[in-house]
Amino acid sequence: MRIELSTRALDRIASQAAVPNYDRAQLTAGILHFGIGNFHRAHQAVYLDALFNQGRDHDWAIVGAGVLPSDEKMRQLLARQDNLTTVVEQDADRSTARVTGAMIDYLEPGDTAATIAKLADPAIRIVSLTITEGGYFIDASGRFDPAHPDIAADGAAPEDPVTVFGLIAAGLKRRRAAGIPPFTVMSCDNIPHNGVVTRNAVVGLAALFDPELAAWIGENVAFPNGMVDRITPATSDRERQICAADYGIEDACPVFCEGFKQWVLEDDFPAGRPALEEVGVQFVPDVTPYEHMKIRILNGGHAAIAYPAGLLDIHYVHEAMENPFVRAFLEKIEYEEIIPVVPPVPDMDLLEYFRLIEERFSNPKIGDTVRRLCFDGSNRQPKFIVPSIAERLAQNAGIDGLALESALWCRYCYGVSERGKIVEPNDPAWERLQAQAHKAKEDPQAWLGMEDIYGEVARSEIFRTAFTRALSALWEHGTEKVLTRYLEGRL
View 1: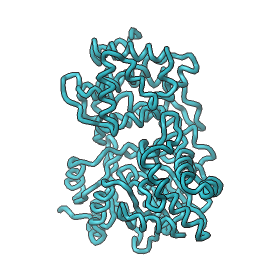
View 2: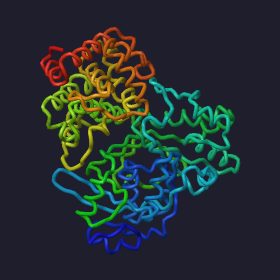
View 3: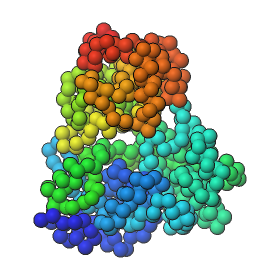
């Protein structure tokens, strides 16, 4: 029997999946979170649900918020099931389901007044964000861009902000005026030094309309850095059907994810925080080594398999790992070019970490798609790949594999796979990328002209030569032959 997910149905669902053992009516909000997507619901919300199940910190429940049209769709779907989410964890040899209830409300996106009022509520002591790598208004060097049209608009009309950072600044302004201590701002996105980047965005925007407020934020608001990790694919009819068939739960937006999860945080929460260390969150003085490890090895590894797999019309990530050319390319580029420039991490063996990642990428149940990995390269490449290229160049070390990865991305953005299948737009900047990729077929340097993506790397003659060689070879010989040449040291 299939049961529609709701609070009333939890007793019946308990025979088929784990459900909250706490009284959700007794939860009160302590966190406002922007970006109630799949990753947040598989990560931060799961940690808090586990903590609440221990009978701890019930004054740290989540209130959702958003600014995008897609946020309203998610709000409506979740509202119909009392803001509950079915989280299905899938490893190669087991699958389990749990219903989480850490979120108790979801503000209407676009209701600026309600959002700012909630931000000013003294009960809200943490404001967290999962807004994707492209949502921070930063350039290739990681600097905040105050000239971006959305930021400039918020600077000109701070009383009616349209960005997350404009809303946060408005909320902090109101708290300052009322004498309410500021909340901590906690980024949960895959960006190096995500706390610093978030601080720069909030302070930089505030400086456009109130320099004194900007100075106050810089001096009084905490922005801890953090590293988050859990492979979480998008939800499709496939996941909804599995949820219903295997667990008897009719959930309009279940979350499927791997069993593995990791969260490393700097312990800088002046307004207080939930006892997340009780449920596996690691608090450290400096998260930088963990960031480098995860972003370079895991996210960089995703990029390495994404584009050759996309060009070969491989659908699932585990299928890409079964392709001998793609997997060997991943291993060679990781062992020879990426891992050697990742700084040591306390109590971690980087080679063992990569072997764990290979297992995770190979998980046949997770259903992660190659297209998801290919998405948003214009924002991901400058964070996941270009820094490794820059460090290799600084050390006078080889970059043939990284140059090939970049060439594969360019070839993918041409918009046609090797079998002639059209690649549907897969980046917010797709039109620009496709135009540059078409130019680069005859003039590879046209691709490197996007200095907002490549920065100083684009001016390296060593990289330019290697990229040109790789892209020309891809057009002449195709992906599999070029990967073979690289693996044999003949590229």
